[in-house]
Length: 78
Image (cartoon, rainbow, N blue to C red; front, top):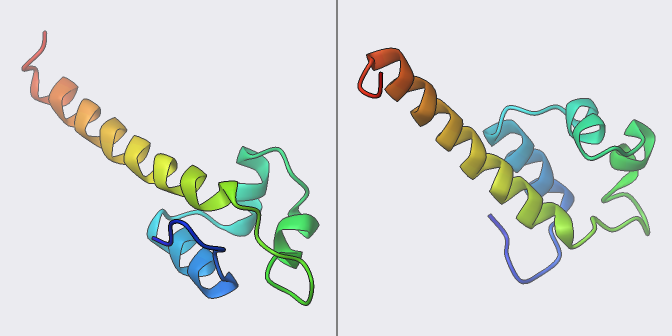
């Protein structure tokens, strides 16, 4: 994941695929218009700085949720 510099549209698309999100789902989660998200990376529309860190936190949270479900399902913490 890109940190410290502007995320490119290619990096954004790749990261969305890695975390199994569509642009439409991402837009809903961050309470933005789908059209606004789609326009990022085109012409003068840059991807906001917060997007890379948001996606990294989303990725970590998904891993945590999977681990939590695994532990719960195993009965280790009943």
